[in-house]
Image (tube, rainbow over all chains, first blue to last red; front, side, top):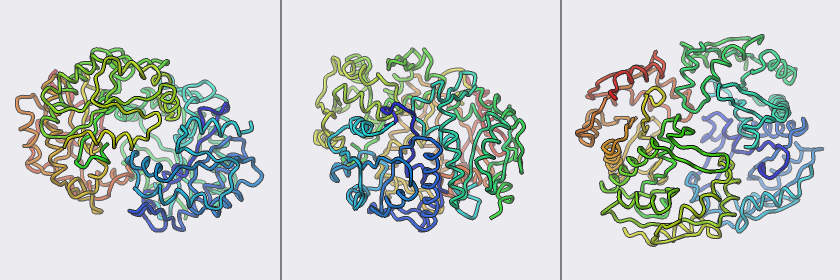
Length: 156
Length: 156
Length: 156
Length: 156
């Protein structure tokens, strides 16, 4: 996305937030846990920091930054509502990035650094009840082509 | 710091922001450039996103997150004033992290992934006119001991 | 490959070797240079260490390790002959990994950490005169499917 | 070391080897396990690949490469003997890198990505019965100063 958009955009993801957490919160019930079957659970300390993180991203956008947020809506519609509330008044393009779950599972294996099972467990649940302006499907479409399709919908 | 503070703190640094930039801004005059002698320069596009980033960090703190910010005040006092303005009304502990410039230069070489010269060029300038609540010196003191000294001044 | 092969295999690549070099050799004429147009050139110091590296990989295989080597044959047939000589007497499956150059160029952009132009410059030249036991094409085939196709040809 | 030695040296470590292993061997009894208390155990599949890796490093040196090997002698004297056998006939400078175990434990915490307890468990055992040409102590001496002390003993 950053390579195809003509203006400079900040790219922030849930991974950025997880890396900003204390190491002790990765693997703790209050923080974020990754079960051997790929199940990801988050506790109250994670949720509190995540809520503040979300407010912070919204503030960056209100301060004039163009921001690409890459998040995984483990809570489906509820996750989207959390963001919608934080981003109130801002111009947002909601993009769903889908992938056939068998293909996603294969890419998870190919990456080599993921808990196997996450891709399948998350493939559908993260889109449940979520409303998008645009959906791209990476199953048979290259990342760059998806990025260009999204960029065509960005107003700037 | 995160390992010694009893509550969970987010740790964000100028490096987090630089990594969030488009690749094309690293090495561009509008973005951020690293000269062969270690001189770091930032242009208007960098400054605009950096200002929004700063506002966002402040908003995370206002939303209740405890945040450790690791920044390099290339502009000395002016850099601090920028943060002071953004953090108005928040409780802040200003900590100066100093190091003998010859020792810092040696660590720069030992890291192996830095432009040599940055450490010496920045060792003094980043502290010029900056007012701290606390100063630690890593020249002869271990990181963890410095972290404990800082933690002792954190009110929580 | 490692995920689909039943036995444990070591995976080593030209990147492993480049990371093992002194930082000063990256960007030096005697070492390895990456031109702004994607052209990669290597000098005599690089070549000497690369030759020793190749002998070392061969010795690992002779000592009983199963080894996956991921190399970029910038010299085409000459690069393969260098490896053939080092691997004399060992059982080797030569696999060409091809990709349509436009698609490869897109993936290069999507990775975000590459000098643009390398993919196009290398797409054909690395296969010139090289003889393979098997060729996979990642243009429209998933990495894991390619890996399985290769694994089906591995004798173990 | 690479920055202070006048000739180009390859730097390879046990970490390079561990990264070359299949992901499935990290955390498997046949491979390498990291217990919550910092205990590291290796199984037969790890040992077989490690032995081949060692032979390969020796072959690189015999082929003319100058090589810095950074290993952790979990088996003390037995680990050194394994290397001595592989390196027979080569010129080797054996360097012990020591550190006060409390200081090493602090650095382990400061790194933030290590299983706590490894440093203390390994601080003494890795030197038991090992014979060095030179010992450096990083407790109070900077890495670069240690590197220079070692470089002064390298014949080239």
